[in-house]
Every structure is written in structure tokens, then in C-alpha cells.
Image (cartoon, rainbow, N blue to C red; front, side, top):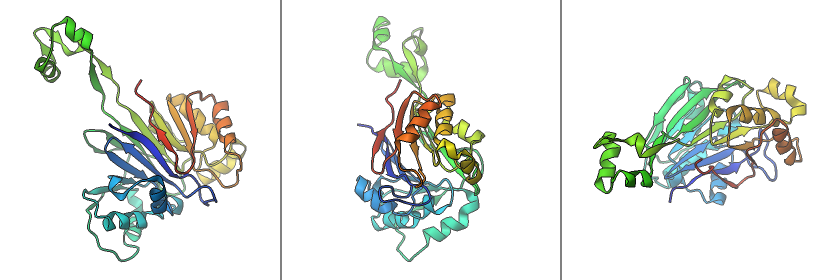
Amino acid sequence: MSVRELVVLGTASQVPTRHRNHNGYLLRWDGQGLLFDPGEGTQRQMLRAGVAAHDLNRICITHFHGDHSLGLAGVIQRINLDRVPHPVTAHFPASGQHFFERLRYATAYRETVRLVERPVAADGELDRCAAYVLEARRLSHPVESYGYRLVEPDARRMLPERLAEHGITGPDVGRLQREGELNGVTLDEVSERRPGQRFAFVMDTRMCEGVEALAQGVDMLAIESTFLDDDAQLAADHGHLTAGQAGAVAVRAGVRHLVLTHFSQRYDDPAEFARQARAAGYDGELTIAKDLMRVPVPKRR
């Protein structure tokens, strides 16, 4: 059975707390695992969350601030220690190539796994496979930062009652799917479009075009809300979003499930982030992320 869920490994911003580890998020997408922003302590959080090195197919770094990347060295070494049987692809801002290399070779270890480096230098498509297309968009932060968007291709859902009306059964169903027409019956007459699911990951950034583009029409948006709205100027000065801004983005973009994370240690009441996102008009599914929680991607419409 396919699994699509976000496993939250850490939710703190610059400074971890007793209850929040530095960043780390694993997106399980059917048989693949995409690890986003492994901050310090990610390897231990993976153990606590039941995530193995073998589960990782991609590592996606938004930017090279420590709370988003210092765990990379340990994760890479664990991948090699466990002899993961498949290549692992790493995406990160091209301007941070030297940071990536320093983290990759921070200490001595034996390389046993092929790690494919795919730096991000511009907006657009990064890679595609049968299950999804991975895209990136530039964000607005003091250092170069990119957000990521996963898009499942649209498909067709066959309608059994329509097939029966036209007497199409067995191998003829597959033939109709391949050829688009069979004995005068078109594929459109016996099927309907099934929109692909979409996920976006938006970390450290001010409001910008990239945020809006990444969030547009996604089923799940994992987005930073470092500050509360009273500190909006502080957020802008440091290249971050508030809870209200994240909620407003989700409203404009038609997001189905909003996951707020990356919280400043200055705040004691996580519920206030939810209140401010709701006050911005967001009425869809809302999760205030906690370490080690699992958040299912919404079921298809």
C-alpha cells in the first residue's frame, strides 16, 4: 500500500529547545523518501521516528544556514555506513557548493554509496521520475535559498459503469488507455481526469513571488512561520514569515493542508500560530508541527 506523509523530525528555528530539535522533514511518497533540511541532530531524530537511511532517495537543502544543514554530515555518513543499495540525489543552492563539500567530507569515512550532486541554480524543473516532477523556486532570504515543489502527473480514472455501457472489458480496457480510442469510443467518454497530488516545502523567506508560486494549488504546504504577526517587521528584517502571512498565502493559493513549522524559541504558546493563521482567513486542514509527528498528505479530491 502506498504511503504519502510528512514525517516531522525537527521544528525549531535558529535555536533548538527542550522540546524542538533543529529542522528536518522526511516526505514519504509511495516508495520514495525525500529528506528536507537536515539540521543538527537529524540522524538521532530519524532513529526516534523510525526512519532508516535506506528510506532516503533525495536530500533537498533550501539554504546553508546551520539549522537547516548541519545534520547533513551525519546523514551522509549514515547512508554510507548502512550501505544504502541505491543512489541518493542531493539538491542544494549552487552558490553553496563549498558548504556542501565541507559537510560531505567533514570527517573521514568510507564512501560506499553513490551520492549524486544536483545543485540548484535557477527556478524550474530539477528532476522527474514516474511518480513526480521536482521543481524549485528562488526565495528571499539573506543567503541564497530555494523552496521545493513536488508535482504528481495528472492521470485518468476509468469509470466502470461507462465501460460497461460500451461493452469494453478485459484487455480492451488497456488497449483503449494506450490508443485513446476503440471502436469509436474515446477515452474521454469512459474516464475522468484525476489531478495529481502536490506538495510544497517553503522555509526561510520573506514574502516573495517564489512563495506564491510554490504554494499554488498544493495538497500540502509545509511552511515556516518563525514569528507571530506582532513581530512582522522583525520577520521581514531577518528574511522570515509570520503565522498570519503563511495563513494568507495558503488562502490565496488554495492549499488543502497547511503545516506550520520553524518556530522561534521566543514564543511559549504554539496555539497562537494556529489562531493567527485562522485569523488570516485559512479554513482548511491546519497542523502546528511537533517533533516526531506524522502528517498524512490529504486524500485525493
